[in-house]
Amino acid sequence: MTLVAVLDYGSGNLHSVTRALAVTGAEVVLTADPAAAVAADGLVVPGVGAFAACMAGLEAVDGPRIIRERLASGRRVLGICVGHQVMFGLGSEHGVETAGVGVLPGVVEGLAARRLPHMGWNTVDVPAGSALFAGVEDERFYFVHSYAARALPEAEGVAVTWAEHEGDRFVAAVEAGALASTQFHPEKSGDAGARLLRTWVAALR
Image 1 (cartoon, rainbow, N blue to C red):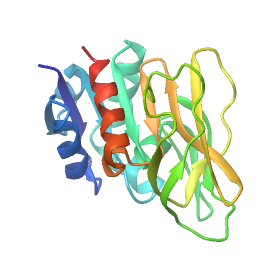
Image 2: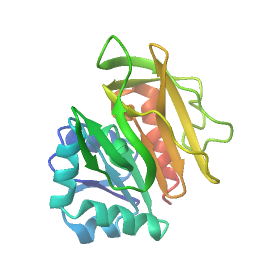
Image 3: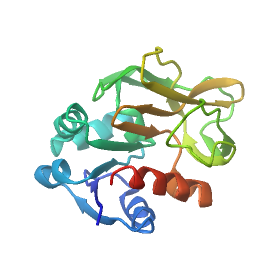
Image 4: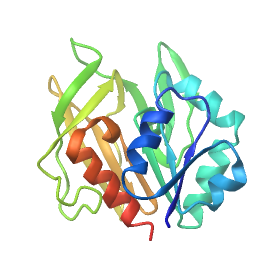
């Protein structure tokens, strides 16, 4: 059976993500053990709240090293919400800049919108040939955030899915080698989110 580890570093949405992944048929473990996180077929890094707090939690369980080590050896990682944001090089919140894991180039910053947070269902602009969004290219997903990466340099092998809130365009998801990450919450996105998670788990086999 496919083994998926959800990295336990104190984030608030760990259990909802764990339950959603269990529905895919994978064996799911919630763990802060670095060896278990490295050894699993897939690693999921959830996250809610502030960028700096999530990075502090990740560093306390050696998360950045685990993520980089897995990706360097082609072992899949899925980041969700702030777990997606911390994959970027820098987070800028309330005038405080915090270094991220840095496996994606770019800055996570505040959205330029009147209504914040951006909360609710939104469509996404999926690139042709996306593996992660196969079968759900035209669906809506559930977002809750006030910050996002609003630019990502084009690079070979990197597929970027975009979304907009009040005309402000931001990165909704990234597929880059063994890394997949989503600004939205697939575990809160109904049938479309469940299918996306099944697709990600199926690719681990």
